[in-house]
Every structure is written in C-alpha cells, then in structure tokens.
Image 1 (tube, rainbow, N blue to C red):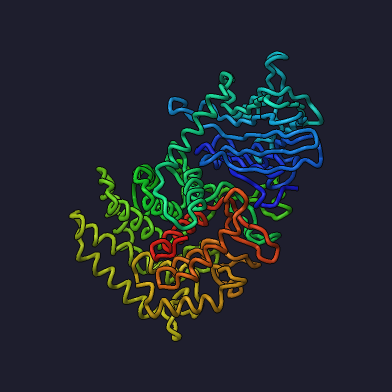
Image 2: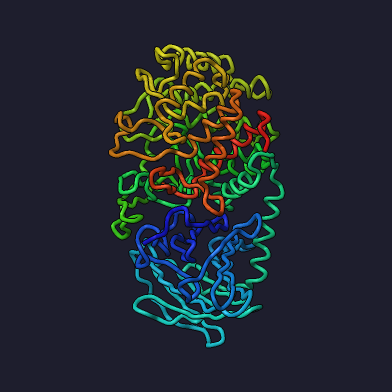
Length: 598
C-alpha cells in the first residue's frame, strides 16, 4: 500500500519528477517526461506496480529527511542500533549539451556517517503504467555490474549495486561504514540506442546542486514565511519543463480529491490558466526570463487559428489529451478510476484568455520586450474573445455539468479587454482600443446587472445566489477594489457557506452544478486566496492567521497537495500542486505588502 500523500517528497530535474516516501520508496516515476508512462507506479497501487525501495535492514531504523539547501536533492538520515547513514536521492540535471532524448539519471547515494548500516535495495520495474513486464538481463562485470531492462521504446540501466533476481523483482544488499560512499544509478535511454556511458556521479550531483542554488539565489525574497515562499517558488520551477517552458499543474495523476470517490484527474499537463498564474508569481519575484520562455511555449502551442485554442496542452504543446481510464493501476488505496489524459482539453473556459493576457501584461509592465509575434498573438486572442463574448462556459473548475455564465469567467473576460486597452494606451501598441473598451464596459455592465445576488454579493453564475471561491480573485485582476461593498459581502457569504474548520471549499458540491457525484475536501489555493483578500482589504491579522494555518499543513519538506482532508488530517489530491504553491506566494506577498511582516 502506498504511503500517505504527505509522506512523499519531490525529486525533479525539470524534465520529469519522482516521489520518494519517508520509508525510502520511490513509488512514482515517469520517464522521460512528467507526462510519460510510469516505470514506478506503486503510488497508484502497490509494489507490484513498480517501486524502488532503499532502506536499512533494521526494522526499527528511524528516518529524518530534508532537502540539501535550496535544491531537490533529498537527504534521508537513517539512525539504527549499529550506526547512522544517509541516502542522497536526486534526479540529476544534465548540462545543456546533453539532450533530453539521450538520458535521464536517478541517483541513490549511500553515505556512511558512523558505525555500520546494512541496506537493501528492493527493485520492481513496471514500465508503461505497469502494463509491461520488461526483459531484464545482467551485463557488465562483478566490479562494475549492470542490470539492463527493456520494454518497447524504453531501456533502463542500473549501475552500482549488484542486483539479483527474485520473483520478477530484484534485490541488492549494500553495507556502508563511516566514510563510505556507494552510488547506484538508474539511467533511462531510448531502447534503440546503446546504453550511455556511466555517470560521473560526483560531478553530476555537484552540477545539480549548483544549478538549483544559482536559480534560488535570484529569488526576490520577502519577509513573510520566507522559507515556505522560497520552497514554493522552487517547486514551481521544478514543475516547469526545462526544454519547452511548459508549466505542469502537478507531478501526478489520479490522486483522489475524495478518498474512494471519482474525482481523480491527470494533472501532468500545461493549463494556460495555472501556467499564467504561475508566471505572475515568478515575474513578481524577479524571474522575467521565465515569462519569455513560457510566452515562447504559448506561441508554439496555440499557433494558428485562435478559435482552435485549448485550455490545456501537453508539455510540448501537444493537443491530443484524450482522457481514458487505466485498468493496470487500481488507484491510490483503491480510489479508482486512474485516468490519463484530460477531457478538459475539449472544454470552453472563457476566463483563460483573460488569465493569459493579465500575465503577459504583468510581464510587459515588468519590462519584458515584445517579440515579433507576441502582440499579434494577444490581438488574435482578443478577437476570439469578442467572437465568443456571449457564450456560457465550464468555468475555472472545469465542471462536467451544463455550462453557465460564471461570474468569475465574465470578470476575466472584462480583464482580457482591459489589458488590451492598457497595452495600447500605456505601452503604445497598435490596436482598436476604443472597440475593446466598449467590450470591457459591456462585460462590467453585464456582471453588475446579473452577477450580484439580492444580498449584495457576487454570485457563482448568473441566476444563482451561491458563491464560489474563485470570486476572491476579482480584486486581483482589477475588476473591483478589495474593499468594494460587493466584495466584502462576497467574503462574508464565503465565510458563512464555504469555510469549514478554518479552510475554504471551492463551492458547494451538493448543488449539482459540477455534474459529479460525491463531495470534496477544502481546496488549499482557495484558503490562500481568502488570505490574500483579507490582507488587501485591511484584515491583516486574519490574513496572517490563514497563511499560518495553511503553512502548518505542508509536509516536512514544504510540499502541498491540492486539498486537505480535515477529518482524516491528511493531504488529498495531486501533489505537489502548482496552484497551491503559487497561491501561497501571492498570499504571503499580500501580507507583506499590507505590513504584516513576521
């Protein structure tokens, strides 16, 4: 059975990611990309679906872990009766001279600290989401053993420890004394090529550490929850593909929003909305180059007719994200179905163009120069927004029920035209600003007339009196002031109906608006959006308290999943969730700006 979701730590080389449990098991690894098929899939089943465990033989060994500074090299220190030793786990970052198609290296380094500690590797490789049993053979010499596994297009080479077969799995034992260092490296490469040369582990780990720390040193750090904000920005970088610039929503698929329920989705793709919000957070902390990289990705992904724009793409800009269910993986602790692909790619979500234009305008304000195609792209997107102005949508939460005129979506339509007008009038770009201003004013008048309940709060959608946590973002995009009476009334109604045990739900699921059965847990990003709103409307103490409350729910290495199960006291949903981490950055920034320093 997999560990609790909060028991996993992230490894990343900005091309793919692995999850390592407190018990030393790598239970999730997709190769060679975040959205490739898993080689280790025990996270969505058990050891039979692929896992690589490395821990001391002593059953009472005690583990403590941390990242090696501002990196994603995980150091797990094991204390046993016979001694102390560490496991250093890392997906190494190759120099730019090494193309992604050549190799991916996962290092597990044993370091003896004191005494003597015996470790056992338990390895079960199950490529293609556990649908393939690889052909495995021994190569190399006794001094330099190699275990080679091939399944279709993928080949894995294990070097370091000597693995012996055991019932369709492999084991290796290694004992380290004080001062000993023993490396085992799993290398992925295309199966039609010869295995790449052995990794220079010391050099690779050193380069990886330097790469991460150089990136972290450029962070423009604020005072509020400094460590948590830095780690969140690092996680956002860890979810950004180094080559394409695509920013994925999470490193996993199908971790349940409700344990035992059907709300299991694949988040290993690039949502324009989430990526745009991530971009804003990175730009706010000094990473203008990230904006340029993602803008290039965007231009490639949606090149052509804007009417064919999707709201989510593959990491390289792929459009075919056919959603389907896997029978080979039973689900996290039995929570089925396990889905790959995402049907939201076929939805119309009216807010997305607004999110993109808001982010690009923030980058423009920060000094990002226009490329040859960037402003023409934005003009084309505004033309598309004009054509679909009166069309209902599926909203920010990608409902599977009937489309509506969601108030949040309509406010982002307003924001799209607002940023078009400002681009012309503030930055001197060419465009029909008067036409866009008329469309902007239409959107505002429509929301004022149809998006406000008799009680004075903004509504989830036209004709409803329900609220939705996404309404907390209206001041952030400039639609209204944080202390607008309608906004304050919206906050009060959210506090009355959506805040449970101090955390915020996205919306009430019992209304049936989302077209799904069951319930869900509080959404961490929404709780942080409320904290941001508190800070911007003068409730700084409440904002600080909410940020503190959410930060206390992070795991021991600073990771948040999507939701939090208050009754079960456990994280829920896909992890690490970009939206949760960027919402923390925004909330902490808002508290800092309001004078709520630590």
